Length: 352
Image 1 (cartoon, rainbow, N blue to C red):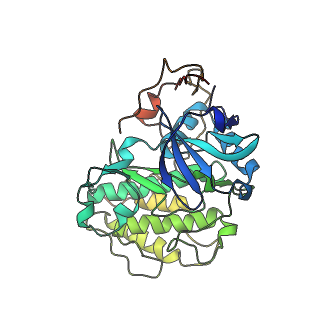
Image 2: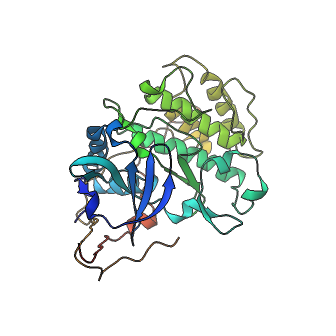
Image 3: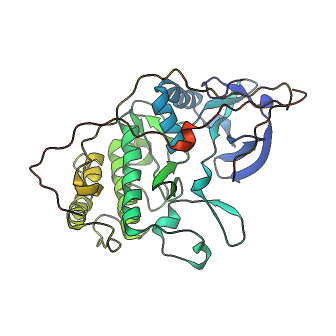
């Protein structure tokens, strides 16, 4: 049974394994022997099933190269999970292992943005901290991912320290969680939209999340990464980590951060943040382009006859010349090596 084709799948057909997380919205459970997780809602009656189906359909409509890139930057809904025809949750991929860290007690935890923006603590000492230049690169990676979604008509909504992961391996990059909170710009959310405390846009209520509020919250993420200050807001004094920005970048970031306190539709857009954080400020004009459908995309299957082919679990700067024209457009960033090398999942469960 293919599970990444967007079609609904019955809960009773899934090899539900251990509980790995629980929150106000529901539970996250692993599917035995795979890197697939199931999010099951506590109160399915409060969800919009059509909105959830639209998220799975969004992924299916992407050309394969963009679909692979999406899988590398977000734990995106693959399909809805139903119980006797009623939507109760969805399947998603587990975040890659490099987005986790080992605590001093040898337990594994997700490498959330909070560990990048909060002052160092004894309990965090096993987390490799980025160099100043890597810190800037992580801020830029965050903006680029939000921009990638915007270029495809998708509003992120709740951007915060808890639903953005980061890694320095193999390069500075980010990975988004809680993707059932996203919505098409002309659509609705699966659940009632919310904001994480200290990450809300003062000018936009959660029910009206849009590209403008996304840009404001991205500005919070960028400046909090650059300053390592988890509560920084426009109007506060901005003090970047030493050597994280060159003179041009720092001056531009300060101006954008000041402008972020302005009225809706007047605040800096994502391309301005990309320009400010890029080397020599020269990467802002690079659009992300769709590419032709590949013929070698590999589907993801669950075969529910026996367990003979069970998959092994995954292991755990110089100032620019303002007059110089921008570089020519380039293609979308490639998917990570891990995504390119991913093989289909064929899971067989006895007695099903």
